Length: 227
Image (cartoon, rainbow, N blue to C red; front, side, top):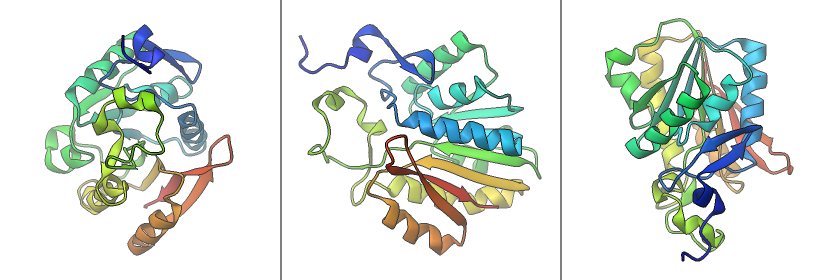
């Protein structure tokens, strides 16, 4: 018997944003706080009616599926580097019956390099992301049951854990050059100790940005107006 084995993996499902989703050891177990990212995305969509939603690091697909449970968006992409995670996301989508294009890719790379995933120009695009943001091997402040979760979904880099976000930011200029969106906004979850670091990096790009808190008052989300 495995010690501290997550009950969500044992039973094969988790409740998130009023729905049940399948999970296994190939995907991260959704955290309650991430529902606040979904709520902000829904609020944003109702106010701005984006034409395209791109979820980067979709895992089990819970973020785009939860957003689509509340509002329709014409074109939706869910991207993950893990083929095994995408199998879980696709199964969850079969249960929900939404229209989502699932892509195995490294962040925005497939949109930049692959014309088959072309997005119409001059549209309103929302990107959402909950990328791994824990420093590699930093187990000290993590609960014991996380040892069963996929490392690729937990750890974001050797130095700070914020490296995947830095990589995503670096891809955005090429994305803009290719698709020329009328509007582009990024909503993302980060570590609760990364605001100062994020501020320094985002200021260098000259984008408008702010941070907002989860239901516990912890500022762990970024809202970035890129265009």
